[in-house]
Length: 161
Image 1 (cartoon, rainbow, N blue to C red):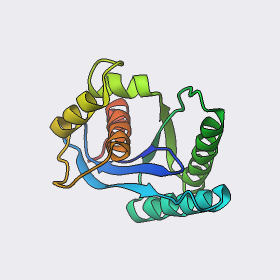
Image 2: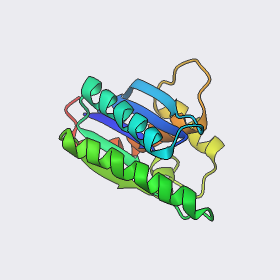
Image 3: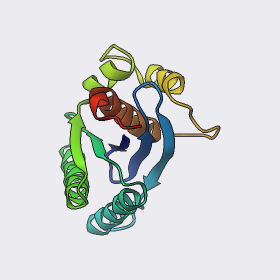
Image 4: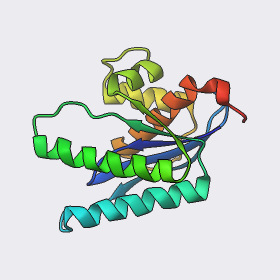
């Protein structure tokens, strides 16, 4: 099974593609896609949509796993990330990918076994669960890998290898 994991954002979008059965996943692709704050939001949304569609077309995931929003004090940020999520979910469905959503608490529970784990603990555990490239990665990329691994654990009965 191939899973595309997304950590949604409009400045930084975490993207990861994994493949394989639970416990045997391989990381096929990961990146942090960035858009410029100098661009109007609508243009940033188009760039994000094009990027996600390109990844879907290249890797043909069986499942798109995306992080749900958590409440944030900045309502503008929450609304913009919600718009990004909507665009990504639309593109996934348009391209016949099944979509699943997980809260940060669910993701941490799946990766660590403790929903209040900090980012450092999550990153450490991810490196134990899947081989990570020997390059600097920022937290959005790790978050996307965690979202993908969570879906892999939840949908192991769909695994075909």
